Length: 361
Length: 181
Image (cartoon, rainbow over all chains, first blue to last red; front, side, top):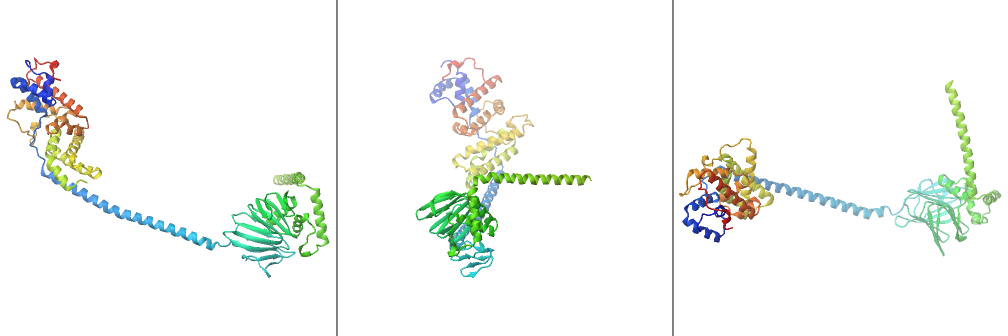
């Protein structure tokens, strides 16, 4: 190598980035060239390791170690503090879980026992009512197996939570079963009942070999002379029996005399049901009750003959029914209502005028 | 958390070189001691949160020291330090080799190093503290290739400056084209 080392060669050598081969090649020149050797040595000191005499004081070491002790104690305290918190949390969860289990177990075992039967009570709507052979007073609780009898001039209401069963005149009703699981089972021996439910109470009827399971709310059962008549005003009921499996919707009626036929509900029966549900069994309604039996007017309870008055009323009612149809009645009723409304409005207007004139005076 | 034995050993092994680096960064002995204390406390706190590998403590200490020094420089940047002459610092006497060309040359070199910006200054100081290129690359979080390029550029800068100031003989014969690279 004749000339001096280049700047790049010097930089590589000084920074220690040159390879062994390059260093060996350059060393030949450096051995003979004092100038280049001086430059490389000077620049090498820039990145050469140099031992410093500067030493930190001992207080720094003490401070560092004391800080370590402080932080260590803090972390230990934190660990100690966290443990009881976790324990308390776990204990709380355990208590909550046990409470939930206990409550659910109580509900699971106690509710079916306490709610074995629905509370049933009877009140008299008219006359005397008998449970078995003894007369009952208002609010008397009715147990399963009780047989409720009403006389010719008496009516009763059996009620429970959101449920009312109106028993008509000369009726025999047995509460054959009462349990929360299977519901209340009524057996209508004879007479008529109107059932009205507005809750989730489960109940069913047995009458004349038929089973009536309601899926609705309001209907009438009439059982006289081995003939069952059912009229539904609200909801739906299911009738099952020998060769019969039929559901009756609202505004329809059914008779066991013609089990395959469902007829439209007539206005009288509907109004009878409504009047029974809203109040009691008045005498007039009682006669209207007999409208249901129109399909077989000759049937009499226990062979007793009806008096001439009831027969004449029956005839007149049946005649009226023949004359007026439901569809025809509706517009007439509407007309009547409008007329009455107009009259009332006219009267009100007159009164207002009178008041105004009085106020002016 | 780092054990007492580990922190004690780390202090014994690395406190001197870390202190040297800090001192050359801040030029204040008391401040350097405070920073060194902070560095080790930060190491303990870091070990509480993340855990520390004993093989990595040196690089971690340098990394913390660098960031603390930069923070300190920012805080004290309003009060500008006029002199960068490290030889004036009493406890920072670098042991000199017998074949030192002159005190003037060393002072000029140190002055040039102190006037370097970041990260070049830190790189040179780390090299002076005896760290290898892989260790410095790890601390600086850059690749070794980048690190070496930076070192070469610093050497080139120093060479030019020293030539300009007349400490080195002008390179009148050498040419860049003849480089072995």
